[in-house]
Amino acid sequence: MLKLMIMLASLFLALPASHAATSLQLDPINGSIEGDAGDTVGWGFLLTNTQNYLVVTGAEFQSSSSSGTFTDLISAPDNFFVVGPGFGASTAWGQTFDATSQIGVGSFKIADDATQDTIYGQIVLTYDLFTRSPFNPLFDPDTDTLSNGNFLTANASIKINTVPLPAAAWLFAAALAGLGLSGQRRRI
Image 1 (tube, rainbow, N blue to C red):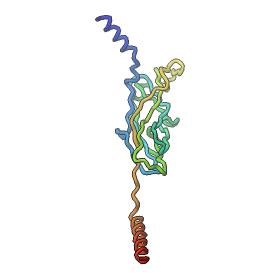
Image 2: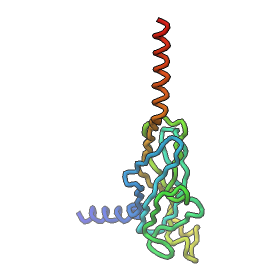
Image 3: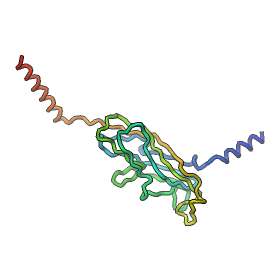
């Protein structure tokens, strides 16, 4: 029994705790955004990491649909941030989406000819982990790198609003239909 407890304890200590302390939450919380064909919409985020130092390296929207284009905002050079427990870092980093300021996890330009009702997929965030903050003057990427190419995922979707025809278009269509009917009656 003691041997089993020692084995389980050593196995638990060998697991990378840094991954358990890292999470990604989209804004809105359910990951569902909406817009019209041709609109640019996007997601905000809250990224937490309580152990080691996390640096985001990229984001993408993975979906089987091609009804638009995703733009990674979170890993832009002017959006550099270290998420961790100290030395120029914070254990939480969040941004609301703002197309003008180019902040958030990413934006999605809905195709002008999009016909789908909803595009389903997920945001995949990639990051690297370090034992020391990249802001620390003693930081050395060769000795302070824990792991590269880690990832977090969050379900995401884009609802494409159908744009109803304006009232004037309906009146015009009704007038054309009426003219067509009156023309048929005269021929009879």
